[in-house]
Image (cartoon, rainbow, N blue to C red; front, side, top):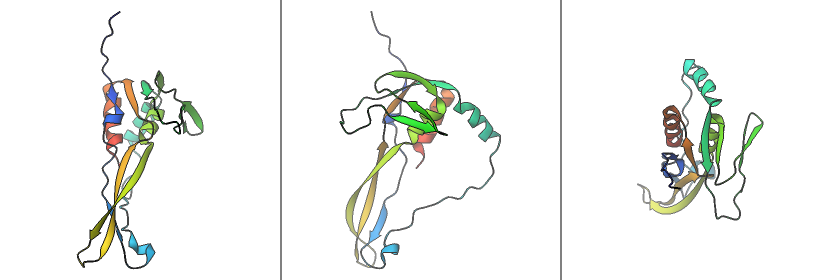
Amino acid sequence: MPRLARKFVDAAEMEAGVQRPRNLKSTGPGKQALEPSVIEPADRMPSKEWSEQMAMNDEQVEVMVHETTDKQANQIPDIYVNGIPQRFIRGQNQAVKWKYVELLARCRETTYTQQKYRDDDGNEGYRNIPHTALKYPFSLVSAPQKFQDRLKAVMAEV
């Protein structure tokens, strides 16, 4: 039987947030050695968009968590939303609620490489360069366009 090509969105191919390197100075108190991270305060209360998002969270989509060769990796990842678990079987398509897929997209691991640099005063320091990837790479197999757009927005968040 011939197989038909399916259109799906592969979250593993998307960039997982854009982060800037943070500099670590070699002199001064330890508390002040690392540049502070940027924190953006909320500017408004939940709106109609928020209630629409809550309704969207309970809609079903089809997803597949990719298999892994890492023996240390969790072979059956489970994601909890408000204490309710959703277990994902790697390599199999599953119909799940969108809220679990969105949280799956937010499960990321960040590792850092260090690079030596000199600041404007000539002092040596280290630049911590982040590398972020999905903890559980997955593909959105079957979902309406609004979910594909939302996934792209979530993946672009830092």
